[in-house]
Image (cartoon, rainbow, N blue to C red; front, side):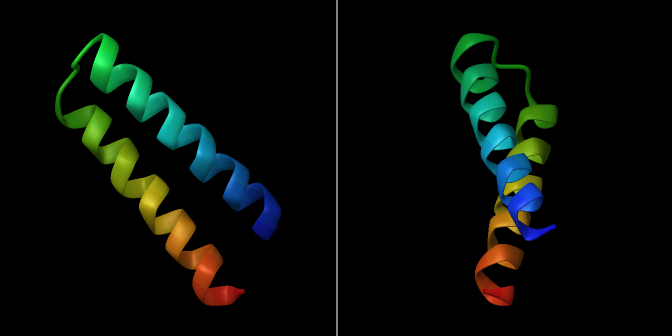
Length: 47
């Protein structure tokens, strides 16, 4: 389960980066970034 969480976080960061630099969608992109950061923090905390 933690591996899946990490993969989702990485995918969200990639989507955020692509959206931010290509489309500059706005708030939705930043929400994706926050979700990805939370997922990575959970992965680090749980080990």
